[in-house]
Image 1 (cartoon, rainbow, N blue to C red):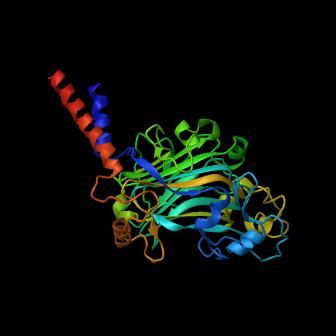
Image 2: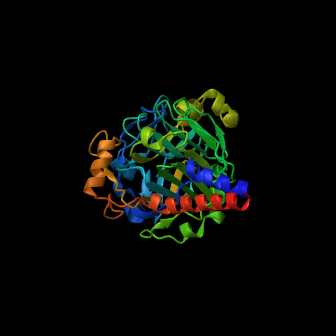
Image 3: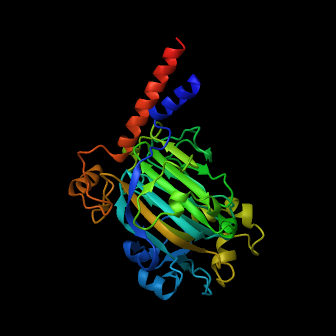
Length: 386
């Protein structure tokens, strides 16, 4: 008993569990207005060497690569209707949120379908500017015919990964500045690919907090009631969510030092620096075509049926902020800098509510009582066993 209480105490002190802050809705991307608060990339994939052109909004709309269905869901997809000539890239979509989310935010992503297939590399992620100085958070990512979602963070040197006992996923990589970053593989079923769609989709969530970065996944049948019953205007209490799939506590990676305000990004590329690497591609797609090469066997030629499943279908994406936190206008290039975040807090313009910097944050208003309680319990145990 005493040992259990001491462990709980240490979890609070060393910040290796999520803080259970209450969050207010800041931005709801859903229904007919889903695409209003995003910028379309409008350029070829010059970031991951993928074989796609990320079209602008006009082309994405006219080519039915980004649209809202009659059921109100949002589609983001790869072109599957064009016969692409040799050495030409295939059209796709990359969208970036117009506003940035500082520390003290939460994202919830409810999807019915995610892209999959040989050569396909989808991602829902966030990035600070400049990168990697202000970090990157990969919430949803996978390639080819992988069966599980892969989460990760990327940073400048100095941010590392530990394995907290509360994390349910499997870690690989401890230096978040190297290669693929600090990766966690989802261990729950139905988190990616055809299994995700067959299960009716699911919900992903990411908490961007001063105590750490935490990511959750629930298949459709396991989505917590507090999420499934939420509306586009309701607040969010995460205290019943359970243990996260991926945990990056500030005890090994100082969030305030290595991460700044983040823009949210949704994209689908093809082949490139991960899906197209021969050793990776051939793990699940070696018998797909005649050449054994990602681009030649997939990107060129007919788009259907190869890319019939290369699409996201979102019920919604929602961004939340803790008390006293505001979204940041990204008209300035270095929107992730501490100066930009301080200015946003001072102006208190976030749609999540009026900022009140003089008050303790929601995180600490909920965290301090827990800390005091744990301290009292440990002291009580010590008294009883003396």
